[in-house]
Length: 412
Image (cartoon, rainbow, N blue to C red; front, top):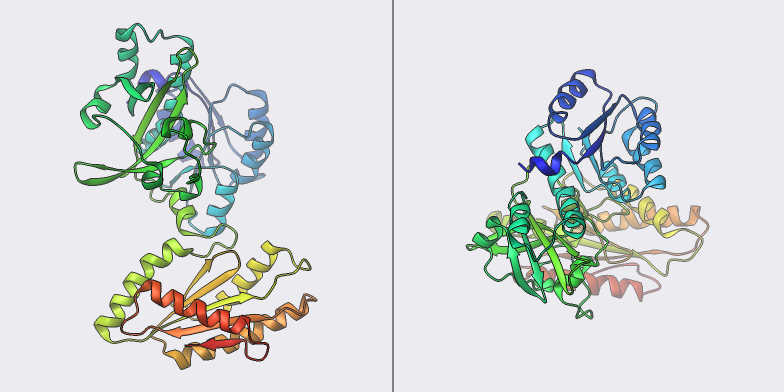
């Protein structure tokens, strides 16, 4: 535990339950510089305005007067870069989506594990304080002082000069000989990466705005996930400090990044990343137990401006969720297409679902004052189908429907 780092922190802690608040604050007070404790979101917002030296907010979600997410939303108007950890019992998609929209990257489910809470604090802020200290207090030419600082960190830390490792702490040097990161292969969130950008990896990551950049590295034949932070050092030409924090086994019980990776952030439905995993499971079940598996792909032809995109996507999602079986699995894919995976359903059963949804969706579209129509592609899994072929077949069926004025449900 990096006690020197923790002793620099000023934390605002907001929790309405007396027993939890008292227990957690008594522990945290032993580690941090200043802990400001509040009973609800309204009090927390007022207190933050009066204490602009706060480095981190830890807040419950469900609280009287103002909940935690509303408080964070208001605080973001004052300082959009303040890191936040939420403590909550929520695991529903609305909580995840709102949290991501507010820039929250860490949370801990109740009952709190204080060891995990400290690790999350370290994950969020240790690198920032290290970079500030290297920039303002440490002369890199004095290797003994620099090494003493690096070895106090809980992360794997190294300083690079001109793309070469210059100094590294013991954790880093024992694990990485010559760290070289291929961004295309390593970045987990592919939205962060542009193939056209040939910027060196140190500079590329240093310029990312995302505060929770995760990479996948193979260590001793094991795939591990690290949160990586890179900062350019002001006092040395072409010098960067790199921190890697192993989050492979960080037990947050869940992870906002994992949600973002597997879900569409507008509708809360699964995306194609999750489809790959679920299809693998369902297709094996089909072949083992000789069950049927069908898929529907639907889209709205030429979305016009009478309905906002987000409103339409959420309305379609709600309609689908209400009118398919509990064990059917819904996905939002591409810009405005949906997939419905129907276990134990043959082609005729899937067509019945598609015709039912077509009628309901077209009624909804008409009620919104647009003459646009919904279109559907339907296929059943064949013995020789792999995932790519299965998806290509249903996309072809949808394309056929989109090009047919008379028949809006097509199948292969």
